[in-house]
Image: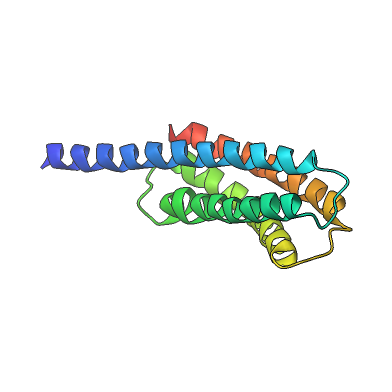
Length: 145
């Protein structure tokens, strides 16, 4: 009985480690594409910019979703028993939710927009929120590892 419980716990932790690795890889890819777009200034309605931006938006939403519905939901679903992790998760969740909202608003604005007049300013705001999100994710992921 005890061995089966240990096996289930190890399996859950392995899945968590895989989710964390995937999250960090997606985050790295988001930052890479973010930098590519930032270097395309001045922002005009040019096919290269639109293509990169569309690619970025899709990846951004995938990354945000993986964090929200993968790692955080896994911690907050009730299967996590380590009090320290739960405490940190509940502490950082409101700020993570804000960064999610910023990313979603950015996506909604630029998904079909043909005017990039505010793109530089909006990228800056998004970048600040992604940096905060990275810090919060790292804090939680460090405890999970």
